[in-house]
Image (cartoon, rainbow, N blue to C red; front, side, top):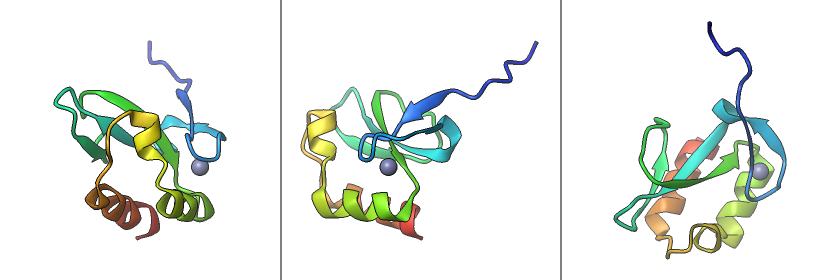
Length: 87
Ligand SMILES: [Zn+2]
């Protein structure tokens, strides 16, 4: 039987809860690199960001991801986020 309930995740920036499919996952891979996971299939420890433009702007301004992931997060990751979140 299909599971109908959609998993909920919390945006690490604004702490609001959304359906997992409405969030963007950012993953620290076992190799220690950081990837924006647009497929939901990248292996590793992830954190989630919502697609609210105000929240995205805050993420791009304050660049909080290294704190959440425990590794340095390069400018190219934020460039990718900008592309995915703000189009
Ligand atoms: Zn958010």
